Length: 423
Image (cartoon, rainbow, N blue to C red; front, side):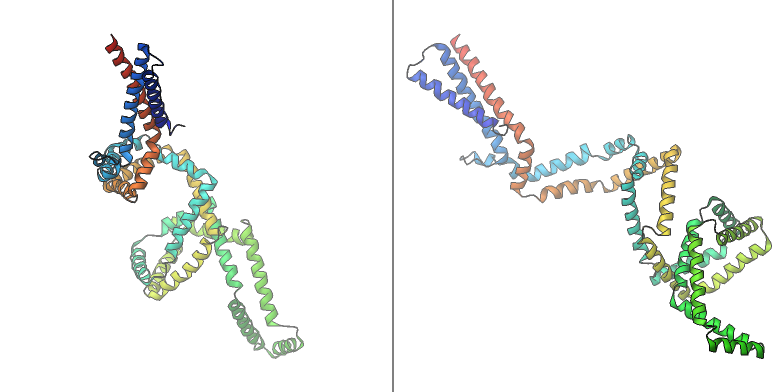
């Protein structure tokens, strides 16, 4: 009903005109008041028709000689219309000054932190970070990257003082328990290496050498070993399997238990070594210096870095593809802790806000023309029919009231004029 409001008003005006004009012509009604009513319907018809023409001329071509060239205004002036809209959007509604002013009113840091507090958004952010990290990991074995990394590492190792910073970092990591995820990762990779068939072959080879050396220590030992092998009392293959199984079992226990004796022993040793480094102990610092020299010697060969990067690529790719892996879980736990800490740190949030506002403002100035290009390209993708249809769909209903108002106002003006003539 609302879309046809203008047409209905025009039909009513025209119908009223025909009706009362006919009644007057046939003498059915003669009073002067009916002449005034008829004049009102006549003016309403003229007003309604004029507004119908004006509204229709915006969107469609009206096939009336001499007049038709001034119709279908939107399609014929789409370039001017497009540039007008672009200018309005870029220089009025979304100018850099207006956007910058709006940014000052928005707490961007709090908005982002609140967004990241939701588990669903955390999962989406994690997947994005995993994808980005995987793209980086896939390029780890690039020869150019290996060569550049070799140069950087050699320069850094030669000049860096590792003793005190490394000691402090190791001590804090042990005391705060930040190292547990790293231990779990190391233990997991060690367990994988033990399960490798090559490890069993190597262990079997070493056991064979030990048994042979044991037999060379005396006739009695050699005879005992010979009899044990012949009778099946000693089976080096079974012994190697059982040793590896026990080692794997111990590693599984150590991985799930931060208080496992093996991990506690390593923690104690590392803590003591870290404290010695911090205190400047000669033996501890000499060990680090020797490691630096050894590292620099081996890094001189590009194959060392390339092999290291290839192995790192495989390990990191495997870890990143599994959301339950130690590396991903380590990242998740620290990311949550970082978000919680930032939620409580007003000063850090203010710094984030200042940085984001400045960065966004600079980008807006630099790339502001792209806003206009997007508006322009969006409009140019539409043909004339689609453009007219979209505009008519948005404002067509309101334009129906213009036609209604034209009929109503025209009718009132007609009545007033008829009254003035009568007076």
